[in-house]
Image 1: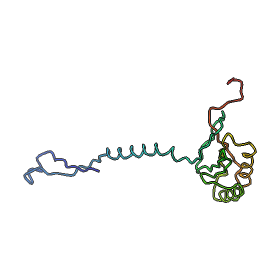
Image 2: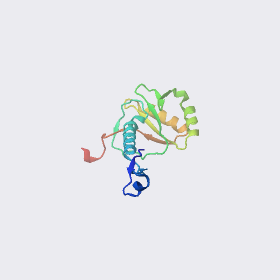
Image 3: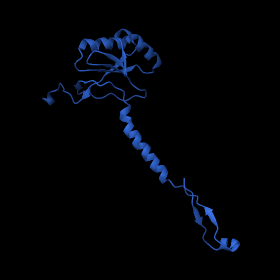
Image 4: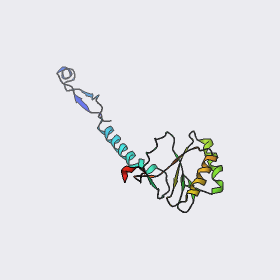
Length: 157
């Protein structure tokens, strides 16, 4: 980082050469290192929420607890309000869904998949996609909802 020159104290150097002798400073200046690390931290904090993959849908609300995180990037299947099925952000025809899912399942370690469906999509369409997920090799299906929805217990009214 930065190396400076420190004047030697004492008269020993002056006797030999007639003037003060310089030696390199052996201390590391960590201020630029800390500055760079803080900038990188801020960049990652801003960029991390933008890395989530998703298609914009109006998710229904529920009072369920969130699922724990995973090591592998989660596979997300979305059913839009128009009934279009998407794997991550790629639109897939309903007839090709099972074969595409089988190919993806062969490459992945986890059998977990997140199913996102617009609140206006019929129950039958969601169940069709869940059946395709099961036939495609994904038997651990998590339904994605918005938090803060209605509950069925007596405490909320």
